[in-house]
Length: 192
Image (cartoon, rainbow, N blue to C red; front, side, top):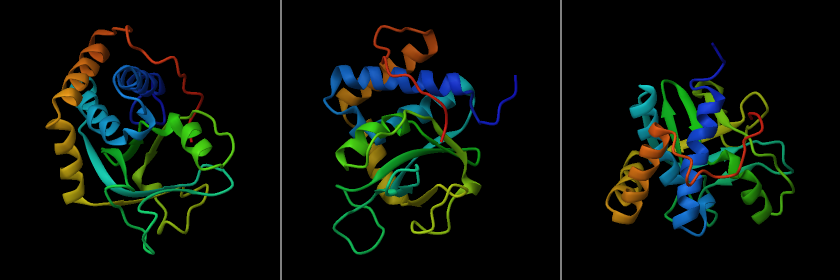
């Protein structure tokens, strides 16, 4: 069956639910674990779907139809840039942006007092990127400012942490085998 996405929405949701469920069982704030979502999501794409996914980190901006756009960047800077305290991580694969944390938008929106937001999948062609973080629109709903060195630091942080690495291995195994032991109860309701 063909679909307008790189991976089927049901596979996106299963990847999200497996990773979120495992993170929730081991860490307090899964919605603050974007690097883990992107690293393990890219691994699952590579292993289970034969899709070459890579984890990418830097600053990001998204237009989700909320009162304000969401900027995942260094809030202390006058410029749109990242820092260790203000950044985002996502997956790039075959010309697509896949953000496995987008179903957690309600948590972000609540913390930023932006109102209610649905739990939706974000999987869009990179060609839909806006020209700048200040030119977001429905047709160009995101802007990414990737940093190769910062990405390497974030990926190393996950891969050099034995606790994260064990959870990552458990996620890959659970996804490949269909193990639902730690499956998140959060459901994805459509796409951005």
